[in-house]
View 1 (tube, rainbow, N blue to C red):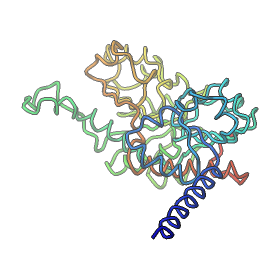
View 2 (cartoon, rainbow, N blue to C red):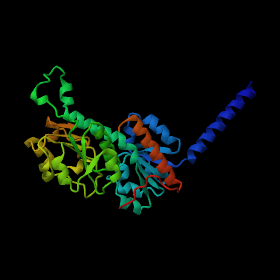
View 3 (cartoon, rainbow, N blue to C red):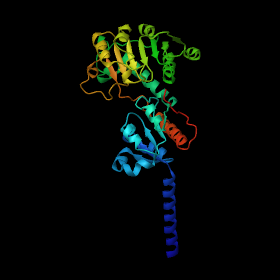
View 4 (cartoon, rainbow, N blue to C red):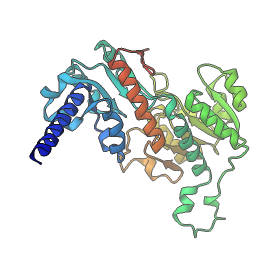
Length: 344
């Protein structure tokens, strides 16, 4: 009996030692603070831990000298202290920043590249979920679903609760990339007339969704009942929609933004909504996020705001993590990276 017990104890220590060696063989990855606040962290964390030894940002700060030399990858969702230049300079083994989502405007690509570090994103993965939230905001705003749902006993014939018809209306999409195309598909399902403005024209996309290309954005703004923003944030698109652009829109039109808050001049938007220059706005993104409680946009009845939840579905988030891991593993192992983002 003693021999059997000793054999079991020995087997346990051999297994424990083997597990420790396997864990030490995994590359180390720093997990940004926003990541560690996700409610479904456990499931996502398990995906990461299959291939990386993970260190949370809080753990890193407790002993930077210990962790810094080991870190080869950073996983992040959005703006984070983990992308600060001073921190990045302190990571001599860093090879990749794996970003969740398509937007990388919070990362200084030229600086990161100067460190010899790769940047990756997950562009195609987020398209369906973001298009869904865009159409959801459009529908909720057009039919005043939130206002009606607050008090279902409210007289539904009241003029301030009368909505606008979505079917047969004109949807203008600014930015016909992955997300813009998915939005056009959904608009087509509602028998909407689809206009789009983009840096380049795609005959194939036009045929697939019955979209009409606008040579200039002003034309799209004048003709659309709903204007949907689905562009990347760049120096060229920062402040893309300002006072002049809003003044071109119909007084019955709604602005929907699922791109980035800085694409819209929010002060101009407030004035346009207060004065009746446009009818309403539905926003999944603002600047900053979240808005201060006393921000005038939050006090307007013709504004619907969600807190940047475009990609927040279980399926999309899980797939994002899977792609982030694929990208990071490729970078760490010196292999071709599926979704590398290079400085322009």
